[in-house]
Structures are given as C-alpha cells and as structure tokens.
Image (cartoon, rainbow, N blue to C red; front, top):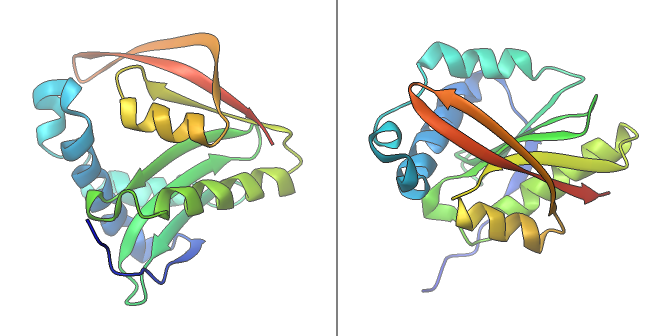
Length: 165
C-alpha cells in the first residue's frame, strides 16, 4: 500500500478542534476496538464531552493534535504532566501506520520531560493488540498493574504500561 506524503503539524488543541477530535476517536474505535462489541459501533460520547475534554486539558495538562496542511485533525494525544500519565492517543484509521501516532507520542513525551517527569505511564485495554504493539515499539512495558472498570455496562480490563523518559 502506498501513501501520499503527509505534511503534519503537531500543535496544542484549540476549542474549535473538539468535534474533529471526537470524529477521530469514533472512527478509531470503530476500526480498532471490535473486542468491545456493540459498544464501539456508535459514538460513545456526546459533542459536549469533546468540548469538556478541551477544557479539562488546558495547561498544565496537554492536549495535542496532529493536523495536515489543510488543518484537518488526523490524530490527537493527551498527557497529564502532574503525574506523567499519557491519557489518550488516537489516530484516524485513514492515517494509521504513517507516523502520525509516533509524532504525537514523541511530542507528548517532550511535554512530560519539560514538566520534569522521568517516567510516563498509560493504561491500554488488554485486547488492544495494535496499541500494545505501538507502545512496546516506543519502549513501554507492563509493570504488572491492572485497572478494571465498567464503562456503560461493559467490563474493561486495562494493563498499565510504563516508559522511562
């Protein structure tokens, strides 16, 4: 498969990015979270939830978007410098495998380093093989911790991954 070259910019998210971020999330979930069954087939969050995500990630938190030369949001990531958590990383499936996620991850790691973090951590669903492979390639490894929760009636089991920065 051949892709056109992408001219990608990573920048802080703005309020007007909220719905595009939600669209990336919905597309990525539909494509990659089939293990969640029907839960992943329709939008999980309302438009106001995406607006709230932007508000919740005002500095000192970090919310970054990767955009193409037209300004279209291709992916996004969120990080919490206070504790070193990599909170979110999603790339629209049309741009997966083209380095967008690596660019976002690198920028988020840089933000955590600037904040004085020596280690990053994140949680990923134990059945999300693509994400587990991406994070392993980026130097993350499981630390043995598991987080279990219920999301809209679906049991979620996530492994905690850590990386020295």
